[in-house]
Length: 260
Ligand SMILES: Cc1cc2nc3c(=O)[nH]c(=O)nc-3n(C[C@H](O)[C@H](O)[C@H](O)COP(=O)(O)OP(=O)(O)OC[C@H]3O[C@@H](n4cnc5c(N)ncnc54)[C@H](O)[C@@H]3O)c2cc1C
Image (cartoon, rainbow, N blue to C red):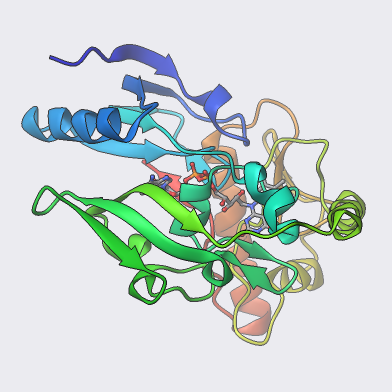
């Protein structure tokens, strides 16, 4: 019988610093314990959610009435191993594979060799190669097939160029609101557009609802200015979508994951 922690506040596990409590919470430090936790949840008919670094995530104010399983290896451990572009992207390798995270013209799709997964459907461990992952712009098979849980990732490595890392970090420092909690870009860039530019042109830069604000520095970031609730952020998301569609007839789609 596995022991899960109970009623754990999730705020501190997300870069937004927003969210209620998890009914059950477990940190999986090994692949075996991750699989066991999933199997235990399935057996108890308990909904579960895999949490990486919580850096692409908005968790509801009511929290999660199931099991949160926290796991993953920091993406930052690969910045010096050929992933210069990933400098400044928080979170885990597994979370980055899930959303095909990327920056400066590169993404996980360029460096993933193999992904080891646990397929909940048949209870088997499988190896996917790069092609099997069906990577696209901030997209992968893992977004479509929720039965596939990432256990480990094999990455193509090489020595990094330290000057490039500095350059990328400086770029972020100048253009992103790194001094306030956020979840990075809220929306994907629609084809031929920049979501940030559309939001800015819609006149929404700096707009506040409750404790949340559309960043003055980068309009595709929503920042937690002062004890923002998930509801504050959701209200801003709704306002942005409605206003941008009204002005430009462009539909924005969330890049962040919303957990309800
Ligand atoms: C300041 C800042 C800058 C950012 N810059 C960028 C950027 O330049 N480019 C970019 O792409 N993103 C960026 N992001 C967003 C975010 O950091 C990335 O999307 C990151 O890769 C998410 O990883 P995570 O571990 O935090 O995932 P989480 O937010 O914890 O989870 C995201 C999704 O992945 C799923 N998941 C996690 N682990 C597993 C697993 N083992 N198996 C199955 N599913 C799993 C979760 O269930 C969830 O659905 C930024 C965020 C911040 C706060």
